[in-house]
Length: 75
Image: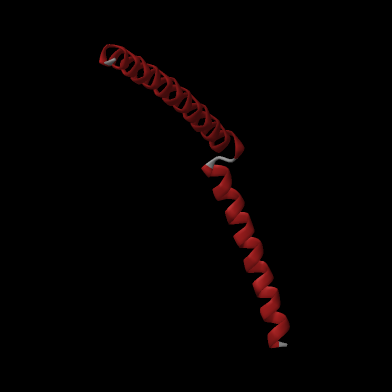
């Protein structure tokens, strides 16, 4: 009886470990693909230099709006 249980348990453990290893490798590959897409979007979508330029333009427009509001309020 024990002669049949031990090989079955070893085969089950081996199969389970192979299954977990394949699952882990696929999850790892998917994680790498998501990271590469994330990096591509971050690089191609908007660079830091472009963001800085746009932010400066928005700030200058906000200052102009604030000055106009101040003129209206103080009249």
